[in-house]
Image (cartoon, rainbow, N blue to C red; front, side, top):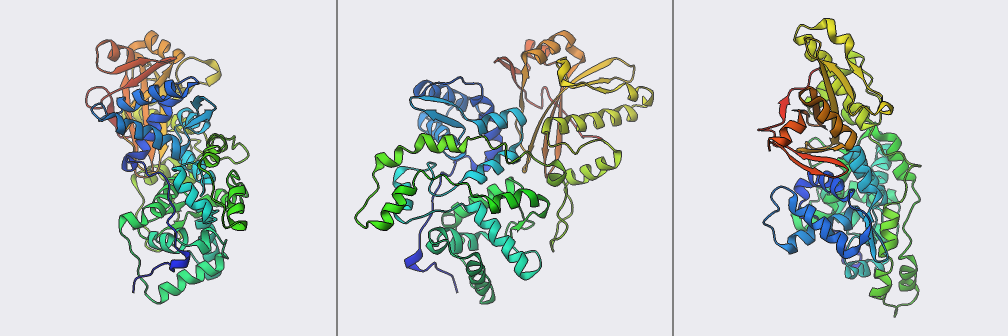
Length: 475
């Protein structure tokens, strides 16, 4: 028998669904970098500059202006990459954080911590429907609360499916409006399982609940081994507790919701709804320093061993466990420092393989305070210097973004040291750790091998088949 949410409680929550969702991690890193370079200016001018950046993304040059505009609005609406201040637009804090750190996992945590219904991430008519129905719902918090309650009640790890999340949580006013007890919802889910109840799993039905679950996996809050059952990631317990006990709420629509409850004739005005727009994006981009969402690399690349049906460790996890045995300091929450640790370990192993054990002790990590324009002073087997700048991103899925930014100081150092200057482009994911090595970026630019755009330094885009040499990372 297929489950149907009782008609008197049925609602379908909506949010923006980026048309680029299947490539979302690559695009978010790229767009955060591009938007962070744009100074505050009029909405129209800001939009035009963002559109030009969208067009430069690989594969977009021939797309229609409608498609380009949709990309821009979807990115800004859902993830709050653009703040609004009256007639002025500016780069949002979330975009700047991602651009500065390369930490996609952190971005998804921050996004989910704030994300709620209603919020100004959809059209006013959809917000209006949620207001009239009295919806007040934070999906990531609620999913974690239900899973945590289930674990405590059953005494072992428990899971949710996307069908259960869609039909029994997201689409049910008892949950999203009436704040139904977690225990009652959990018991209803369990009863359906006992009765072998099925769910409509068509993509257009489960897409919104499914999106949130996918984003929770990208944030390392949930894990799955079959893409059917989704568990709490027990290695993120500290952050999960912050989600569960959070009392933060954007209250811009609360007065309208209360009026709809108390006055049956009241209909929220579209202008009143739109008036919350700027405040919503200010809220999304507020300083979250009291809650450190920086990725705990140890938790991210370690494995939750307490779930039945666990798969074998990925290449990243195997590498990480081997790296732990080397004694390299990798406990930092700074993704840049972690990337430098990986590059440092790689250099030691490279020289060892080349039979140059006698120069390994000469490899030095350079304090950023010295501003030399590189992170590591390594050596070749003949003791010549190798100056290494490390550029790192970390994400749940393996990304394919072959670009990086060099500051003015880094570009000057690259110009001074030429063939001895290397950029190590590290892409760290749960699936694999990829390393691309670019030697002499200035020379490559002068010979038209890489693309360079001057922007307070240099934005470099390279093609791995012509410029970036892929190497298996060593430890």
